[in-house]
Image 1: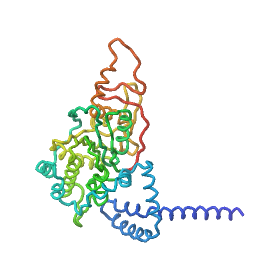
Image 2: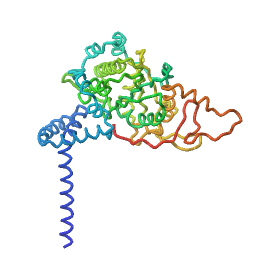
Image 3: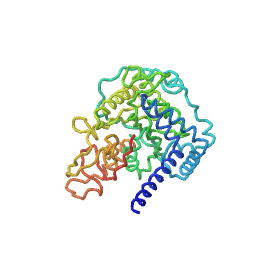
Length: 400
């Protein structure tokens, strides 16, 4: 009798597991195909891509994926979605939808894309796209002041990029800016994306679609963590780090930078931080060098390094930092890639005063006069002059 019950329980477990797998395949067959397309060119992608595509083509006629998409669209309309691409698609007026640019057919050469961008200085962009790589990326860069905010008008700030913006950094900045009425933030970021693989996610098409008719004053970019990989151009695999790969990727960075500043916005490009994995850190260093090479030649854009905030004294990865009061603060997410939200407080404090200079003035007014030993503001800790560390809950770490 016991053997029968045991066998019945095992059989029931396998049936439940099988039903779960079938449900996932029915609802996420297109997601499985996207996952296969995301893979870096190689044996795994060569095997997974045709299998996932065949499965998706077989299951699509059943309509389960459509039901899921309509449900997610409805959630986006109700404000229950953090997918900026989906939110933009379902909330954009019909007139704007018809005006969205058609997908480009090739990103192998920078020249055609640069020509489309119109108002940008083509000679500067072309030079940036073809410039030789800089030797080193500075660990710290001062922020040139922005023009004062006009009375009665909000400064519109776009946060764009991949999960390096979405996880920790963007959420920390939005939390810090929660009560600032002089600023209005637009979330235009998408995890799992980058500039290396427009065949997977084409920022040249998706950014204008997500932005709609908005005309931002400042665009803060944090992108590139997914770009240290080989890709295919005109049916040819360009291996990561080769000269041909570098030139193509550098042109894509220049195209993207030209696009985001084409509305007249000031661009702040946030450099990728040091990573825990030595191999991944080497790839990120190459991506940073390419991005800095382009950004440093553009008068409308500025480079901002995060290393001095989250790295150790030598500019290397550190997961925790000790505060003057002896407490430890998590600087990086457990995955060794993303920022931890509480670890971005120093950066976000500096950025907030840059975006809204009135905060600097307000801080001076609130300074405690000599001899006045009033208690510090609740939730803050003493830090070096350029940064204030505020307590906050850690941001969830997602694999990029």
